[in-house]
Structure formats: structure tokens, C-alpha cells
Length: 205
Image (cartoon, rainbow, N blue to C red; front, side, top):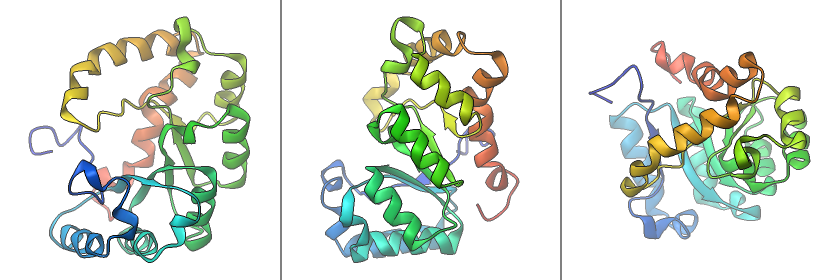
């Protein structure tokens, strides 16, 4: 972030090591870690965090959501639809970025987007919408219905994945080029910029 403040938007994951991906939601020490980091550093979001079903109602995830509310953070949730619904039940005004669009079918993604106006969906690690450089009709229809709610993602959650950033960018440009330019620009970067515009301007987000 110090090297490129105009490009980097920091997000706080609740893990201290990759081994905590499947255990963090039951680890009380995660709460102290999050609280300490939020006292001493400024973030725009919390996540990506892995959370499924009724685990979202456990005390540790509930505290994470409460901290997001307190600090006005976007919640970047690698979750199923059930967990996303539970997050909104806890915090109806939450801004949730749904990692990988929940790996759901386009019609299921559309249904949740219709229900929650503060839900956005990233497209990281999904290949079906860009197979052979094309966008399937089902995905194109959802993109056109919700032009401001999707964004490209790269899922570079480990250092070795940065090796593939250029390759992924070229692949994304290929399928985005098959969409109308205004829609492609929104998905490529404008939607992400809009979601984090308050934080970039120096606000609480």
C-alpha cells in the first residue's frame, strides 16, 4: 500500500495462517486479533473469509460482522447463500462482496442480488463465463440486469498465485471484450472503484 496507494485497497483477513481457514469461526483468539489490527491500522474491508451455513451465527463470525459495522467495512465473504443471508440478518445495511459469486448458478446469483441491494459479486476463480473467450447467455443476462454489481477478481490469496496475474488479466480482457464497452468497463474496474470510493476519498470505509 505504501508503494502504490492509488491502487491498493487493504482488506483484513481473520486468519493468521492458511491452516485457520476452516477453524477461525470457532477460535475466540481471532476476535482479539481483529480488534488489535483494527485499532492500529486502517482497512477498507474484512475478508476474504470462509463461512458457510449456520456457522455464520457463531459468536466469532457475529463479532466479525459487528466490527465491520463499527468500522464501516465491506465484508468479503467466501460463503454459500445461506451464510450471506445470515450476515444480512445480523446487519441489514451490510455491504457484502460475495467471493466467487458463491460458486452458484447465474440464476441463483441473480435471485440474491435482487433481494439484497448491498450485495456485490466477484467473479474470481470462475471459468464458465469466459470459456473460449465467450460469455454464456445466462451470465450475460445477469450482468445486464445488474451492471453495477459484478467485478473481476483474480483470487491471488497466496504469493505463488501472483505469477498468474498477467495470464488471468489477458483471459479476463478476452471475455470482457465480448460485452458492450460500458458494461465491460463496469465489471473490469468501475464497480470496484465505486464500492471503495468512500475509503479512497479518506472516509471511514
